Length: 127
Image (cartoon, rainbow, N blue to C red):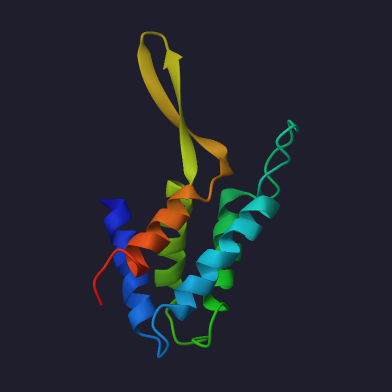
């Protein structure tokens, strides 16, 4: 399951820092601010401010710069996990195509999945 992989990644990154969880925790606190910038205004019909690829790059850099581990993590590994996290942060919209229901990801990012990952990675385990 993708959510379990994401939690495992952020949990292991948090454990690799002297001050447990501080590195990834800062990222999760700032993620709401970033999502507000990435999403178009609710009353607007505009496209998202950044493409999905640009959003992944921005959030990858935000993660890498959110603590004192700058330069210590493999950027490709972080990018993959940030991509997976952002995929989980997009609500899925169900629509009917002919007689078959299909799903498409929403253009907007929601912080709910990120906060769930943060909780499971840092509060949902016994230390």
